[in-house]
Image 1 (cartoon, rainbow, N blue to C red):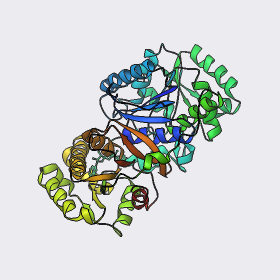
Image 2: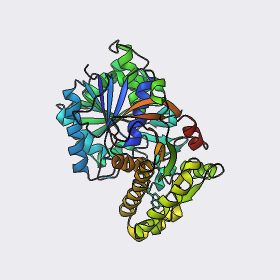
Image 3: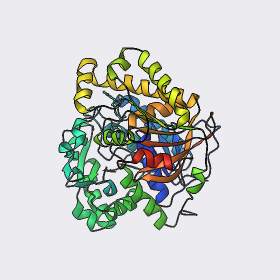
Image 4: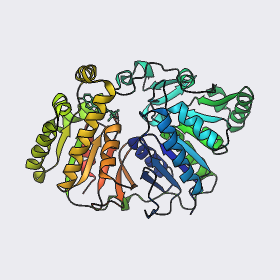
Length: 426
Ligand code: ADP
């Protein structure tokens, strides 16, 4: 069966968030980890989300990976490809949103690309090209302190222009509120003026539905799960989906085994969730300096977990408050310390799976990506949601047998997220 909608996600957590949104909006969806091996048996689906890990790598490497994923999706029939980015537009002036968007558009023959990170359900809205996170402009939100991609400008037309070769325009709410025909007319005039990408405003889901309908007539769009919602609803409305309402119950059939939580996110939400988890389960706070110094801290963590894990879930966390993160970064560099800690948390995760963990919660987008890579899990079937945007995932084709996972990016989930996640995994 041909794929109707393809997507290339720039990190694994965002991919599961999008796959979850597509599922909730009526598309049968599988999320793959990287471009799948041809031998992997995938079920019949409406949408495939190819998860890459290209948000924070050099732009030219991101372009190479994204264009090969695009070829794979087009070969399987995908008429439209969504480049899935973070709803907080995580990127730097060196890329990668602009570079990848232009490369995907060139590969599909050019035209104008709709770009919007709006996702009203999680408080991300765009008005006159400015991104708001909850009630705050992006540059005043906690994202200004992100360890890898600190965001200091809320004007996305400006942000994307700095990352693009070609002109970037604005598709404002007035045109969007007037409906698909008004949007198409506006895009035509922008295209004539030489614009090849537009930041699209969106405040309500109906704005994204309008954008989804228009985007389906183009080969490529760039956005967060909100645009995925718009595309999925437009596909369902078009009558092209054979059976809507994928069943998610099948995905959470019990897998047994032990359970664990590994955290590398330093977001406010994750730090609070860890404090709450500490009341009901053993939590090991890793020493980031010692993690960077050598393998001893990893070995100590594995031994600590090994002593406790048969009695119930354990938590291992590298996460730290902004002052501690800044101190480490000023000593070792932002990327070097981030990657070294991701490597450490992924080794710990793999060792826990080696010791029988089959139910696993990982906090942090980059942290999840590194861990899922090391575990070499080929694909996931999407299960029910734990919190908005975070589904339970069931592995497909996993060498160690079926596992249940939750991959949570920084700011997602309520304060009891960790216990809520484990309560859905048996
Ligand atoms: P989020 O989803 O909250 O953005 P990520 O995992 O994507 O979380 O990013 C967090 C980054 O911070 C990762 O690169 C992680 O390795 C790094 N990190 C984790 N703990 C620390 C720490 N104590 N000091 C510095 N960096 C850290």
